[in-house]
Each structure stands twice: as C-alpha cells, then as structure tokens.
Length: 431
Ligand SMILES: *[C@@H]1O[C@H](CO)[C@@H](O)[C@H](O)[C@H]1NC(C)=O
Image (cartoon, rainbow, N blue to C red):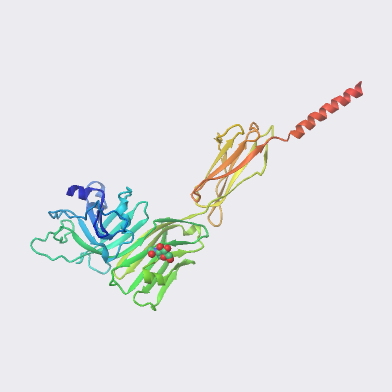
C-alpha cells in the first residue's frame, strides 16, 4: 500500500472540510554529487522525493468522498525524502488545479533543490529549499521557497539520510512556504506593434521577509541578455519612494499593484521583432530571490495576394501566377498550390509546386516571400487555382483563388471569318 502511495505518479487526497492534500512526486536535484563514472559523471543527480501540500482549499463542487487525506508511512523511513507543507503559510496560487492534473494525465514537473539565501551560511538552521513546479499544458508555474520548521528532538528523532535534517515523528520534513514567485503563463504570443502583459506575481509570509522588494525583468535572446526594467519599492510605506527604471521605452510595472497584490507583471507597448525572447522575472526580498520565465513570441500574419486579378488562358504559351506573402513574422510560412477543374469536386495539389523567391527582410524585421507557378495551356477554362498559406500567426490557413477564363473566342473566329470572307471575295473576283 505504501509502495503505491509513494510511487504512484501523482496522487491527491481530499478531506471532508473542503481542503485537500496534494501529493506530488518530485526529484531532489543536487549539484555535482554523483561524480565518478564515465566522463566525470553527471553534473546533477536526481533522487525521488515527495512533496505533500496539505490543506489546499478546494471549491464546493469538488467530490470529496472518494479520497482520504494523505497518511505518512506508519514506520518512519529515514531514506525517504518526504516534504510536508502547510499551504496556508503563503497560499500557492492555483494549487487546486494541481488536483486535476493527474486525472487529465498532465505531466507535473517538480524539482526540489537546496537553496542558499544570500548572505547566510550554506548549511543554516533552518534549512531552505527551492521548489520549481509547473504543469505541462496548464500554464501553472511557481517557484517556492520552503523553510524547514523546528523539530522537537528526543532520542527517537530520526535524521534524513541524504539531507542530514531531523525528521518529524511521522518521518516527514516539515516545512512552510515563505516566499513564492508565480506566473499563469509560460509562453505568450503577441502581434507586432501590439501590447502585451507578461504575467508575474509574488507572495510571501504574513510577516514580511524584508522591508523592501526589488524587481528585475530581463530579456534573454540568442545568447544575449539585457535588463528591461528594474524596480525598488518599500513594502510598508504606501507613500514610499518607488524607483522604476525601464531600460526599454514602453515598458512598465504598476508600482501600486506590485505593492498591494504582489503583482509585478510587466507591460510592453509597441512590440517590435527585437522584443522576442525569454523574459525572466526576478523578485528579491531581503536574502531571498526567486524567478519565473516567460517566452514571448512576436507574430504577424502575412498579407496574401495573387499577382493577377484575371487569368485568361493562352492557347500556345503557359502563364505564370504568383502568390505574395508580405510582412509576416516569424519566418516559417508555407505556400501550397491547388487546382480544381470544373468537372471535379476535390481540389488537387499541383504536381509541381512552383518556385519560391528568396526571403526579403524588411526594416521592421518582417519577411516577404513569393511563390510562382506555371499554368499550362492545357488547363480547362473554369479551373479554380488556389494558393494556400499557413503561418503560425494564423489559426487557420488562408486561401486566395482565381478562376481561369477561356481564351477570347472572338479573335479566333474573327480571323477565321476574315479568311472565309477573303476567300469568297477572291473567288468572286476570279470568276
Ligand atoms: C496582474 O494584474 C493583471 C491585471 O491588471 C491581471 O491580468 C494579472 O492576472 C495579474 N497577475 C498576477 C500575477 O496577479
């Protein structure tokens, strides 16, 4: 039973009073521990660990009948790494969503590592841990800082073998969340010249960890990093001086909201291609700091057009038709050609997909590209030719079409008529 309990990928237990225990299987990540072996060994070692978030409030519509609260193993085991946390110390946003992650077979990423607060000795008492928690597909991402709670030691007190920390009577490492930084989005797409809000927030214990909060937003792209915005704010003084320094024009953080709600989301206006990249939101509180990472993608759909407004078949020579995609971002666009003869119901792919022009890059970083196709004279009039354009900025592909028209019958008959008349005329004359 205990086996199932610990090695089941992700289990939840619900109490009768509207709170639930969330049990996460995590890895304890340690640096440089497993040296040796081939090629110097791994840089990091991972040991299975369990994180129990106690008493996560759940909504009234949760079914509380089927599950029981988390019960630690009856015989404490100093080899197990079992973090037990009362959520109430600094409430984890969206923790209740973790309850459903297992039902929906979403992957929960949970990594725990030792955390050394700045300016404190490495192995201090209490001990600190950093937990990185995210759920794939759910846009929940949190970095928690856990602080161990004091343990009343007696002869029976066990020590966790790997971490050398005293265990509670039930064999758990009792902790509280003292500080966390979270975001409700891992990746966001925004249009060129548009605006975006990059979400980031922090929470801390009721008694503030430090009198001042520091915030830094950085952008990392293609190996280069730069500071986008910096803020310093006294927490206990609403009148206090706030220093917000935006290195990028049009970047801002609502200082009042940062103070009131711990909402340090940054807004960027007039987005450019150069704003794309990985944004790192770092919140500093005294000796502690934690981060969140958000990807920003700039997207701009192409303006699509065909080179011709009217396409009249020429009996002798093939004609060229071009499909132009203009001013889009990012680069990956796809153009496909189809034709639909009047006698058929399903469009067919052109056997030869034509030739592409080279990419043209504009001053604003957007691209243009054209595809040229040859329409053979053998096409029957009434055939519909379609250029299908797919691009990440569009949910659905875009279609532009043209119907080929029959060659002007007039000229042909005029020539024939003229010939007949001429022949008749000469016939009359010669007679
Ligand atoms: C911050 O505030 C904005 C609205 O002003 C909201 O959309 C966002 O979800 C908030 N973020 C956090 C982390 O509280």
